[in-house]
Length: 366
Image (cartoon, rainbow, N blue to C red):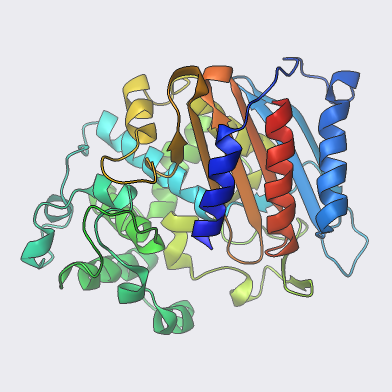
């Protein structure tokens, strides 16, 4: 699935963009084209709901929504609804680590051995850095630590979330890497282990560290973890079948959090993306932004810390998509043009098509 998303994003971030009026006026005629793009993408894929936004340094300059919270109902989705971001959470976890580096509590060259001094590591991991995990080039494979058995049993694990994540780290590092070191191999386990390292560094759960270092300072008051609670939109499986957020199966196991369980409104997600349009926006420094958005050395694709990266200078673009199979989210950031676009849907299949279509259409405007 990620290979398909990567192909879509690669073509998207090479596409040219034209100017978009930098005015905040949802009903202004200047935004009619954005509304038309949303209408067209929604009509073509017909997910239960679809939302889009265009972001500048100051936040949203346009946003709108279409559809209903549940496919079987008539309750319309609203601009204040929260959306599950899936793997777009990874960029937030990486940015949290950057905060810890700036505070002197971590280092960009920190190794897994330094992050987990009490774990017994296979010698093959001795030089592996946490940033290698962020780049998906450490050789850590999902199948080795969070395969089908883990997915079937993790929700009933009585241990705390930090204990579960530490156990995953211990299992991962007790044997040699299962994949080729230095070669890109996308996987959620990389960021679960990064979350475990953050927990070891801070003495807090990843969730509490996110609240303290990301959600709170950026004013992301709608942000949370797992499926957005009612009365927000519900996620949908194939059918589409609405999944009650109270159902344990409404999201991946919570231990996967650092890799993909954040949710929030369009406005709050726009506030986070604006950090990458403003050299950190005073929340983190420009040096941290440069680290987070620098692609790893080695063969393609160009992947930074939670971002697929293409281009240089004014044409530089960052992109990512995320899904827990019941939601789909996409973001494209063009720092040199002071624009980002967001597309989100409460459906994993039709929503994916709609999100990718809408991102292409909005990118042509933004």
